[in-house]
Image (tube, rainbow, N blue to C red; front, side):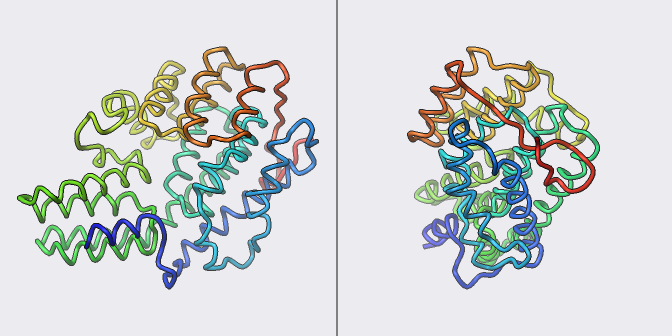
Length: 350
């Protein structure tokens, strides 16, 4: 019964659950950033930038239609997978903007935050610092968005912390109930999913049929919070990219968390992106590869098979095939979304 309850909690919040004030403020920040960046590219010629046009008519319009001055609990229905991560139109737009454009990474992070994917929002922002394309003003904007993403998580994390204390006291059913509350509030809380697995395993050490529920909880933890090292446990043969994760992902990532000034070398960044792809963390793999392309200053032939593998797995569709065809040819045109200047991040690139 517990396993089925947590299965539903992983994908959608109960309709009666409302965002906390900090969650609502985080969504508001995300929507604001997306709307500003959408405005920056709203005048692009659809003939040259069909992905931008499709984004602005589709998911981008969904964000533009929201009243950013009045966050609504209906915003909890925004689906980050459909709007962003698995949306072919998002990625078609993504590759029509120059690699590692600050505005593109802010739009990506903001769209995730507005749709409740606060962990990935933070990952995208931290990855951008490895580009070296960060002036002081842009740095302030990125840090501000990141802070909102962290504050978004705090109310759900407080419930997980309560559950951890209950677990440590041997109150396993109470702990599981606290984790359920945390997931009702924020279904993408990877830490909560991990603790569900840990508590189920501890509670039922001698019950072999519970192994599937434990593995399922850890898999959800990896999906929603892939940089949570504790969730990477289980049978190596059943976890894609298991060995490369520890060797090429966690080392550089832990250094990244200690200092915003730390930048991976090009070789480390390439190994990092490759390991992410092997682990099927394709959205972050593509973002990391774009940073490498930016640092290199151009696309090279080896980029195309990498992008093809992740993009087809992540967001199959005609838009993806069109993007891959353009990337393979000479007709690919890219635009800039943002340039630093005094004032707000909503600065149009002429």
